[in-house]
Length: 404
Image (cartoon, rainbow, N blue to C red):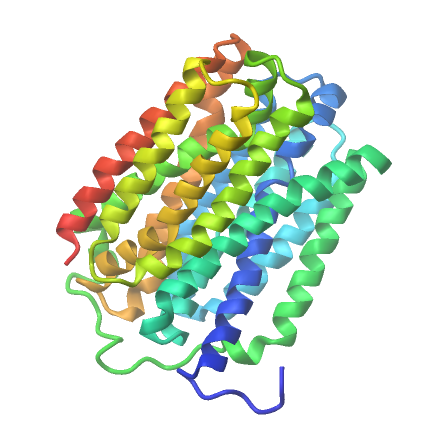
């Protein structure tokens, strides 16, 4: 960064803030995939089933979900930048905890530390974006935020598997820790751009009813449920897509894994595209509903088993694009719900609570569908993805009708 800071609201200022927050979010998503790519190594090392190894991700997201709801209050009290730096430091520590795990409980402990680090990102990130990026660029800000997360997801399996295949799975934990340390150093080097700015009097207005008043607003709970449905569907694919396609379609592991990669890359492309539509008008719920309807149809096509094996990559790519496309509109929809009743002083707690639905959904996915995987009912798992996406459509339309 140059010695002279760009004025707030300028394109340069907004672009810098968006890039820094997006980079931090990509680091968070990188650690989402720290453990899942290592499932084959961990199952062999500790003698685990799909359900047991999936429990590590359940621990990660339970801790993250509970922590995220609490982290929002911490962000509102102490500032987003401090909380964000602490979260990245914990993620770096989780990589070392993974590398040193000697048994299943220690693996769960590593997942717990990673969950503690992950919990801060949504309340901190969205507080920074909403406060420090000008309103006309928020749609693109949310797009970059989601895009960076998708790129973090896509990068993690590549690095973790490559390092594990060459030097072993413990070396992958060390590599993940190095990623966290580098991310923290970069964030602190540019911390001046993310310093908390004082709120204008109108923006800092407290909500009626006190600190927890937002919990009495139905639309806030609907946003939580919406995230639960959409992300639980993704959690199924995150954990089980490769073995599902390998065993139900009889394809190679490389092709099965390519399906998940196509989903992640499609999600990144969809997120980038969705930013151009998210800021237009107040019909974000329609964007979400149309995109998720197409994604659900792709899941149905895969669940029936009628699609040829080569179509796995195509259908997963389309499904990922649609899921990603809905992301910026989803984030603008939540912002509408938050600002319709509360001022910016409550951004942290509202975003922390609503986005904890992500962690709850990801925590439930392996528990709910791991037993189906162990029973060999792979098509049932894909039908579950389609059902969850359909339920998400109904909740998005409800949120849109109530958030004015």
